[in-house]
Length: 302
Image: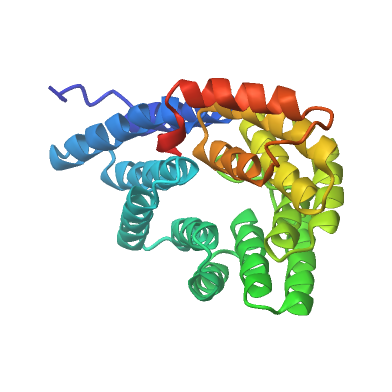
């Protein structure tokens, strides 16, 4: 089956992974995840058959496993996300490569953030920062998630300083064509806005989300949907009902298009905050769109 030694399997999978990441950004993880899992299975077959560059295939396994962890995370399937993050870390240790170890630990830290486990998120971020090159985007991501964890644990001043440290690394980091193409100042600002929202500073969160979205790179509609959904909830928590409804409706449209549970779960939270008797501008349109989505039977899967 795998007898043609002239084939460059590593290059093939490297190109495929980048194409899947682009599709994930545009159309959502639910559509690309099956292809990621198929690739992981095939990579395992190739390694067991001792076909091609063994170390290169192992490196691809680590990268695809981190991608699978991310895509399960977007679906809020934390059990499978943690499984694949752990596999990515295992294969990274087999490579004895700090670059990939840092990548895996960054993913695990953000997973802990998403589950509200501040202590675990901080410890994993610290481990990632120790492992990854200190002038790399991995290191900046580790500090970003560490900053969020610090705020969740009640240390807002250290959180702010750590966010600034992450920005300083982004300013000097060498672009990585394989990972972190999304990571810039607008990403860090949006994550800090998320921190503000999670710690109750809702008006500050809406201002910073709006500013970050005005500067974010094109080609990341799913991320914009996440930011819009989080902004909408913060608007509603701050008593700004009309902008909440407008942002929520936009987020719902993106969530339906990308099938992102991170977006749709937040939109559901927004719906639960709305007074059913409210007559304010935009509420009826949001409620109609939300009801139509719920009628499709997607609600229970987020």
